[in-house]
Image 1 (cartoon, one colour):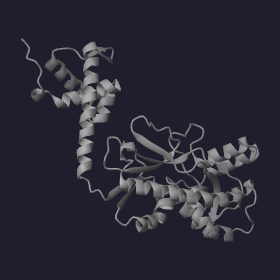
Image 2 (tube, rainbow, N blue to C red):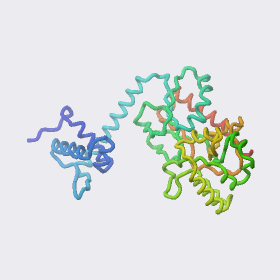
Image 3 (tube, rainbow, N blue to C red):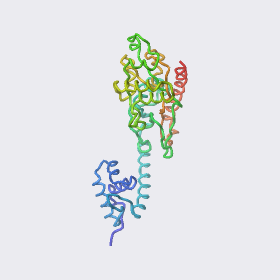
Image 4 (cartoon, one colour):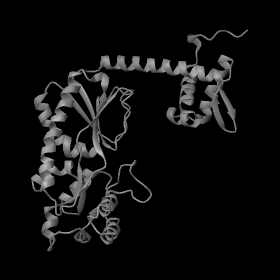
Length: 336
């Protein structure tokens, strides 16, 4: 007679493997998530089936699907794991320094917009120990309590049903070419029309991964394509400029290309919010009036459950104030 399963003898590693495989519908994907091999996942699930005495998956032709018993167990285990995760997050949060605020920001907005303004935040809130991490890594804020706020650049589409607050920093931003004073001084003829870009080095930048296609994967290419669709440039200029742009040096992050343009080594197709201070300080010049609206946005993301946190709300409200101030400056820049 088989003994009744008991929590003290339950194989937790096998339960983790089962939960991941059931949720993802694949032993392979479960293996990737848990950083083990598919064979290890299969072994763990087989051991769990032996322990319970029932098949949890129906296996056929390399395909797996949950059995009735597996489906019932999956619902219960998933709920239990979620409850356990919530308990771990709560326990972890209670031990954290309440004065520490960890912000993860995309590299370019961190370097060109956030960092130059942080002294104002420190002056307003000297009691908050703000710690900035510059990265593009995606964080699951619901599961990762080590990050308080995330600033990201992309098309959006974030799921707010799982407890996230998602907020757009600017309703619209624009892209236009900029170069440094050294470039301006070195050229005998001013850059007045799009075709004049052919006499300059164009600094290449990638589009965000979710925007790239087989035909268009870089910012200059997409920008010129949009200008041609808007009939702001001719198709002949589009073709010539796209070919020319494909020969320029490539940069992984926008702030690197902006600094290269400032030093006089090319023209950067820059996002207005990242170059506004350099334009007003005349470190950069906007040579032609052509611009196009950026299809992406900057987002501030944090957990809804933290909305009553003093340190988080202090930062969020400060960010909103700074973004509003930048919006006024951007309006003047666009009309220039």
